Image (cartoon, rainbow, N blue to C red; front, side, top):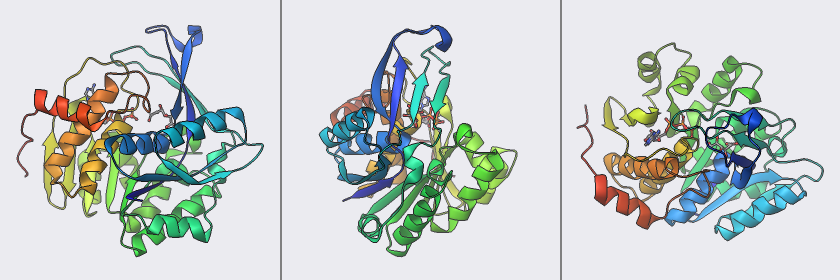
Length: 316
Ligand SMILES: Nc1ncnc2c1ncn2[C@@H]1O[C@H](COP(=O)(O)OP(=O)(O)OP(=O)(O)O)[C@@H](O)[C@H]1O
Ligand SMILES: O=C(O)C[C@@H](O)[C@H](O)C(=O)CO
């Protein structure tokens, strides 16, 4: 595998009725979801060899999810099964350009039951890149499984990527989520978060103060929503504004960004180039309904790049 991803596979329902508030919405369409599974699909569609370490039930929704991943050429040989438990479910209202409330069903979600056997840890440590996220740390035993995988990947010299992925409903308090991520920092090469997430991890009340603390990491990716993205490598940073599209749903922008950015990083492209791939992939996802199904091919990313590409702000 080029990339091993550890995290949740979920079931997404997006409203088919734009501008109808969620309590009134009647028609939904279903997609594979879960931030990690979305990224796995995105990276695979761009051409990477990706596998996912996760946990599903033996219900019919889990069957749909595993079939979807297999069809997307994501290696599912390390997806465990816990009969009687269900994947998480997420419903999203679609009120563009900026209202996308979500309701999550994550009570005893099957992904939190993940454990890592020696074979799973070997699988992770054999990859060139290992990606995981904060939600995987929200409950035991997936918390311990995730820390073990982070440690093994770091020891094996994989490039370790961590998306903060803060979902309030998965945690007793934001402070606990921040602490769980701070404990993982020694293993991380690339930390990805939006503004509130980086503040949460650093325990700071401004993005500037958070950045100051976190930029001792080899790479810090600061997602700024519709403003664009800034990447820090030590004292230097590069900023790239977003690619412009008509917004359908901004939900999934982060997973789209990660897919493009990390695919380019895997090819050892310069940071500025990685930002172009990340922002372009994110914009394409934003222009479509859902996240997994919306992930672009390389040809689609290249087309947007050649249409709109402008240079990033010089490093400073
Ligand atoms: N309206 C938009 N138009 C074009 N690109 C966008 C837009 N919003 C976000 N992006 C791109 O997507 C990237 C990630 O977005 P954002 O900062 O909202 O991440 P996020 O909070 O993880 O999103 P989500 O959790 O909804 O997936 C941004 O850095 C930017 O490049
Ligand atoms: O991450 C989840 O569990 C739900 C996602 O699939 C959802 O569409 C989203 O929030 C994208 O990051």
